[in-house]
Length: 202
Image 1: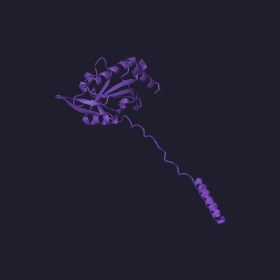
Image 2: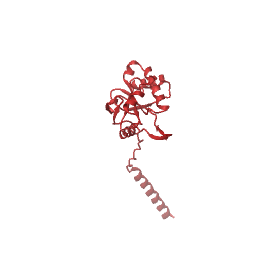
Image 3: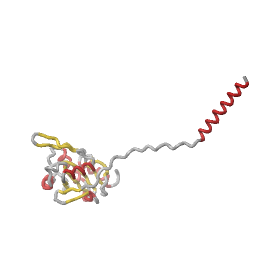
Image 4: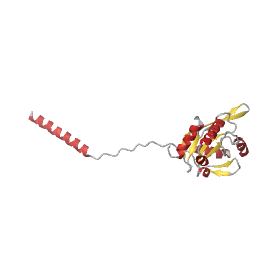
């Protein structure tokens, strides 16, 4: 009986000793879990302006910019968006309006030549001085990819329309993406979003 109690005592002592040793062992650091950031929006491009000039991503430097992808044959979204931006620019303060520009990049280079863009963008309701950009199909593919813009030609009758992403990208004077502009709001509210961004409140 005593021998049994002795063995039980020794076993308990060994268990406690083992637990103490394990407790004192240094713990391996757990891997840090990181949340992947959103893909970068924007990047290098080489395009042609509506005035026929060769331009690149430096066009965005030094000014706040609203970048919008569309096409001149667009039946509703594009003219509606450009009209909303035109109203918003009018609601900006003179200083902010001077430091702000709108760039319209076509996703239909087959039809949207520099001359076609220039005529289209001269509409009174669109932002004054909006810059139209076009290029070769491969150049448009490259810039659309940089901005994560989807576009696809869809046959319609004897012609076609283009299904495309309708996001307005607000870029800062360094050419970096800040936020999408909500152009479904009234122009005064869109202008407020731009003013807040310029003031560093976003």
